Image (tube, rainbow over all chains, first blue to last red; front, top):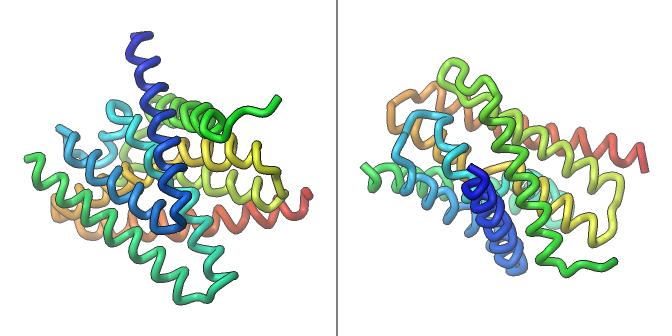
Length: 108
Length: 121
């Protein structure tokens, strides 16, 4: 149990650092991290019941982020216009959910 | 003491993920096929990030708490897989509801947190 938890912490930390490194490339890096994480979580999930995926596969969670996406979706709006904010939000959602759908389909 | 950026992100990310794991395993789980616990965790993480950015923080706390903890606490992958799972099971009303609640809830929580943070600054 302790070993599992320590492994979880190590993988979670690695996921967060990988996301941060990808985010150095700008918003597209965060979008890529979110899409990759959604695909991998879906692919490695044995159970497709809604909401049942988090505890066992938590390390993939820190690779992706919801809070940064929410923050980024408001900041382009203030800096570069409304269309860029909407484009970023739409791209994140469409690509992320599509990647998860593909992952779930392949895992079956 | 100055820690390297990667160490700060790693510490924050692991703490955030462990917090999410602890809450999810204790939380109510599904309500009407919607994963409420993850939804509320994501909203709380958005509000906390808004609070921190609104108040104004320096680089090290931003990496530890903003990029690390809030990033690790919230999760896009679980949200995406839950939504895709609902679509796959042809529960379209629930899938669109989860999308709408997550997007609107997350943005409102972030903006509200940022507004409070600015008042506290």
